[in-house]
Length: 179
Image (tube, rainbow, N blue to C red):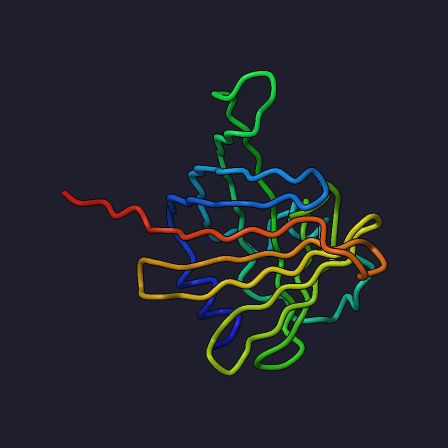
């Protein structure tokens, strides 16, 4: 597995069912989401601005930038359980070699801020993404069960890495356009 193949396999619309456990609040959360992943033109101004703001080597080879959009319903919304949370982010992979690299993210997974993550592919094709934020460290794993089913797990740790704040598991099914 390499980053180009992973992004290509991830393109499309996905229905996600995620269960999370907040150890800090001793709460479980169920989230249903619609996620769309689509390619972005590497020469677009938004991609170029994101690369420039990363302070990474400007000669680094960027490959297959993409955008991820989501709409989520959580059973943990205190004011209105039917509230829908939505957002989007741009992601720009920069390969170091065939199985490792960095991803520039306009918005992070654990904290809503710009982030640069490290990624690698394990021997079984699992995508491992690690992001150091100001307040926490997020580790995400994504693997394909089949062409149209993938799984995602995450662990959110304290910034020192000594305590676990939250864990989650999601199963995601690709939305197919059947005519």
